[in-house]
Image (cartoon, rainbow, N blue to C red; front, side, top):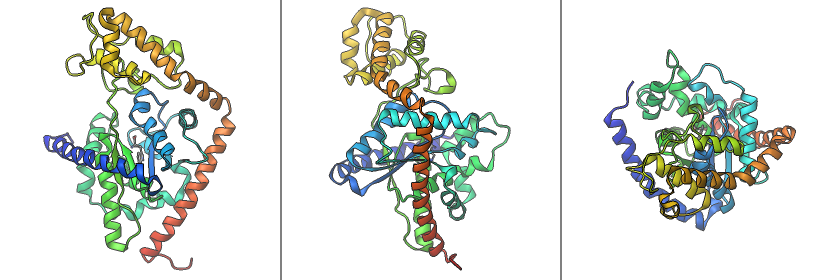
Amino acid sequence: MTITHADTAQIDASVQAVVRRSAELEARIAQDPGAFRVLTGDRPTGPLHLGHYFGTLANRVRLQEAGVELFVLVADYQVLTDRDVADRLPDHVLGLLADHLAIGVDPARSTIFAHSAVPALNQLVLPFLSLVTDAELRRNPTVKEEITASRQAAVSGLMLTYPVHQAADILFCKANLVPVGRDQLPHQEVTRTVARRFNERYGPVFPVPDALLSAAPKLLGTDGGKMSKSRGNAIALSATEDETARLIKRARTDAERLVTYDPDTRPEVSNLVLLAALCQGRDPHEVAAEIGTGGAAALKRTVTEAVNEFLRPIRARRAAYAAEPGELLRVLAEGNARANAVADRTLAEVREAMGMRYAG
Ligand code: TRP
């Protein structure tokens, strides 16, 4: 399966529509945050990094602080989409929890849970699978891309169907808002299709959730490629100051001494400028102008300081949480209990709507 122009065009068209809709949604969130329930999540495959932070994590905390109800999913079953075995799950799950608490997700207001701990959520996948066709599953452009990138010898049934599982992740708690990056838009369409078709077939049970596309600029890895743990080009929230300095020292730049912010013609240099600017809450052009003709060395010094200073309080809080795994597990257990209560209610409604409540 390869990505075609039609796939790219399909994503581009939906991006434009979602960008317009996202602006409307932001206005409504500002007016009435209580009308929204957000579900968002990550696969526990490794530590979260700055790409995650500026791409989605900061937005989660912003929504929580705006008064939106937040569910954060640790998508452990979804790890198995592109690998046979999920490695070191307990470490990665506790790491995700520590990362979220350190950046300000508040377990008193928000629910953090793992989907393997919520049986009723997973049971929703069965009726939901009946609502999509195999052709729809096979033409999902993000799934196609992941199949191409995967090193697995064969395409598993989970790889093809996980977007439907993701619909269960979202619909079990009747979330009506899902903050996403571009690559998740096809999945969001699957969720909307499942919700619509369920409601048409069995009666109104689910909201049709909106995607909220983040306005955050895209951060690249230190090598100029996509920032990703597995490529060794990502600055983890949990990295030490020395590790951070070393990674930035190795970052790719160019031979031009005048530092500018020009992402199209100088992607690597501009990405470093952007990183410093995001950490300092400043305009990237201003940051570049300040470094001026200092060249790559001055740029890297600025970036290293900006990143380490920005992450210092987050890292301190993270270390404190990581030192208390019992506390992290208690937060997870509480989140799981809350998610189970919500999922049990939704599954009861679903079985009722489908005529599957016989003896209780
Ligand atoms: N697919 C998402 C990712 O890889 C993780 C995820 C699983 C998710 N279920 C979700 C995201 C539901 C949003 C909503 O990042």
